[in-house]
Every structure is written in C-alpha cells, then in structure tokens.
Length: 611
Ligand code: GLC
Image (spheres, rainbow, N blue to C red):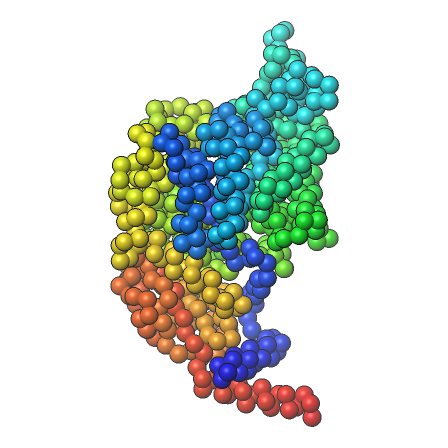
C-alpha cells in the first residue's frame, strides 16, 4: 500500500515536472496496449528448424514438437517462412499453390495440429504472405502463358522491343532482377516477355489487374480462416512498377549492368500504388477481426527501403493505417564490427524518429537473408550485447532462429551452395551473395547432425561449431547466450517494464546506455562494445536525460556471458567498471527520501490549485 502510494506520488510529480517542460526531448514515451506491442517474435525457417521424419528437411511436425521450446524462451509469436507448395527454386518463396502445404513439410492436417498446439500454449502464428510473385509452375502462370481466357493479364507481359533477332525482340527495358540479370524472361510459348523481379521461376503478379488483387486478398482470408494471427508480407516494395516501363536511371555504384545495384529503382519499387496495397491488406485484417472477433490480426511488412519510405507503410498523411509493423532493419543494415557507441545511438534514434505517434517500434536482429548477428558484428562476444539492444529497447523484438544461441554463419563450399542468389553468380564470388550460411540446420544438441534430424543427411550441412553452440549445452551451462536471452525475455514480460519513458545516451566512444524510467525506478542497460575495460559514470546517463530523481544503488538483472557479475549483485551507478564486451541490465529504485520531498511538493501544488 505504502509503495503504491509512493509510486502514485512520484508519477504525479513526474507529470508536473513534464508539464513544466523540464524534461528533455531525449526521453520518449511508449504505452503499449495491444497483445503484440511488447511481444517477442521468433522467425522460423521451416526447412532448417526440426526434421521429424529423417529426410534431412525440417517440417511442420518438427515445429510442433518444438513449440514448448519457444514457450520456454519467452516467445509470444512466431513467423514461418513459406510452408506452401513450391518447386523450391527460391526455397519456398516461389509458390505454386498459395493454399496448400509443401509435401516435404507435411500436410494440412499437420498444419492444423500445429495451430491447435500453438494456441494451447498461448503462441500466436504468423505466416509469410508472398504477394509479389508466384512460381512459374503455379496454375495461374500456366494459364496466363497459354492466354487462357480470364488469366491473360495475371502477370506482367510485354512484347519487348525490336532488336537484331528477327525471332525474338529485345527485353522491354533495362530493369534488373534482384538475383542479377535482366528482370525479363522470354516465353517461347506466349512469344512475349514476362517480368520477374526475383528468379525467373518467380514471375511477378500483375497488381494492375483487379482480379489478382482480389485473389490475393482471398488468400489472406483463407489462412485467417485457418486460425493464423497475421502475416509477414514478403518483398513489398516490388508490387507495382510504372505502367509505361521506363528505363531506370543508372546509379554509378557499380559498372556491372547485371547487378541490382546498377540502377536506382525509382520506377520499380515503393510506388504509391504499392504503399496503398498495404493499406488495403490492413483493411482485410481489420474487417476480419470485426466480423470474427478475437485479437488484432497483424501485418508485418518487409521493405528494405529508406526510412522516409518505411514511415509511409505505417500510415498515410491522413492516418490511414497500413502495416502494424514495417520491419526495422536498421540494426542489420547500419551496424557492424566497426560501429562505435555513437553509431548505435544514431541508428536507434533514426528509427525511433520515423515511427509515427501511436505506433510501436520494432527491432529485427537477423533473418534468413542476412549474415547472422555473431558473424556480422565480428564475433560471438557481441551476441548478448545485440540481444540487449533488441530486447531492452521498447517495442517488439524479432529474433531469427538460432540467434538466441549465438549461432554463427556456416562456411559452405560452392558445391554445397543452394541459394539461387548465389548459384546465379560464380564460384569466384558466390560468398558475397549466398544466403545459405544463416540457413543451416538449427542446433538442438551435440548428437550427430546437431539433433536436427535422426536421419543421415541434411539439406544444407550443419555448421561446424554445433557441439558447443546448441540448446542442450546452453541450457546446462552455468552461463550461456541462451540463458541471457531468456532472462531478457523474462524482464520484458514484467508488467512495469513497458509503462515507462526511455532514452539512449552515449557514455564515451564505446559505451551505450539505454535508460528506461518508470515511477518506481530506472532500468539502465550498459553496453561496452570495446575489447577493453571501460570505467563509466552511469548516473550521467540519467542526468543527461534530465531525469531529476535520485536512485538507490543498482541491482544486476541480466549480465552478459562476458561479465564477471551475477544476477542480484549490487553496484553504484556513479562508478561502473565494465569488462571488455560486458553488457548489463541494471535496476535502481527511486530513493524514498526523494519520494518524501516530492510528496511535499505535490501537496503544496495541489493545495495551491484548489485554494
Ligand atoms: C524476400 C525473402 C527472400 C526471397 C525474396 C523473394 O526478400 O525474404 O528470401 O528470396 O523475398 O521472395
């Protein structure tokens, strides 16, 4: 009772101070109400998560078997890379039936069982929605190529322009596909080119055709009807291209006209019509909820675009709503092993600056298309620190499978390489393009093939370090990345962690502080990103955010593997010695003396107001 009273008093005093304009703009506020606002999301790459039938390929029953693991690490929702029927030219992102399950992943009955089990565990399920393209083996494409009535314009077809070859025109323009080379492929059958922004086996659907728009909305409704809680929308920027097929300007970033970097993609990406399509899908989500009840059905969108463009995916200038969660890829795109504390702050703040009021920030640390965190950031020593950024900044966290263990990129030879983005290059340069190193099988244990399968082979090799970096080993070790991750997730769950204000402060070249303040105290995350001991005054982080309270000594809530401290240790904020690459999450309560002073101040103010 007494502490509730103290809390009320301090909160009221904070409001008074704020309204007096004494708080710095550096403190931001977040209030979360919906189920997903502070949830930890987890990305599963189904092919590599858990194989239940010994064929070396992960599957739905494997996922179902491991759902308790997700629960145990504090995950609230998971998103699945595509599980639909596919010839696997781009490992599921080339879909030949948007409403059916890839046989090597299981059956619709397996899917239903997974949904039932997830719901029983209180886990939400997000599916990958791949709207930009289908497989060239999709029935729609086959019909379109044959000019079957009603399907002629399901894809983007063009005659091309006359060139030297009397039998076949040249491609319509200079557009380049994402995996290199012309974005146009000649169909000998239809005697026209079709557009493919990705692999030639991924023809672009024609969103200027209302029938296609409606078909794809029906696909969303189909899966919502099967009980999924939302979608991660794939490759959003590419939905529309300019209708007159103009050449794109050259970027001067590379001299290779086959490379996607060769062009500035102003006529093929992020067109206004594309952004509007996201708003339309949002309506589908919201309508579904209105008609069927239940929790918010979520839209998460993939766009590696400029931040100013990403902001539009949240909402338009009239607050028409779009994606709940345009993915924040800034931590992936702009931080690396050379980054200093100031870079971390810039990257974090630049994202926060574009999140419109009333919307929720999100933090994506990795995915199946990029290098793993440990490899990107220069080593395993950065794993806990990056997790601390991801999990102690307010908002949603999105963790790619295996990052909680500190899995690293695997070394794969040219012969072992399967990713089309790499296979379309050459042995000399495939390592620059391959996405396979972050897609290798998940490490469940140290038995052969990392406990991923009980068969004798795996679709991609298991990474060499599986004997030490795996769930089993990290669960039994006294300290591990997995344990740090779990502690951080537990902290996110605690009720007061989200009703607060927050800010970031750079304490010298190598130390970043993330501060979160509520009426009972302050959380301070300290990250030493250097390979050297750093002594800092963490109180400075509090005062520089213009927080005028004083705090008792701090208690360690979470400590990185590199730390010599243990949970529950206490320390004084004004002098903290951080070990190389040490990360700490600390909690200090507001001092009671201060509470009393504020009580007196609040009483006087109230008396004046009412006298
Ligand atoms: C997205 C996916 C990627 C895929 C591409 C084409 O970027 O994440 O894996 O290759 O879209 O669908």
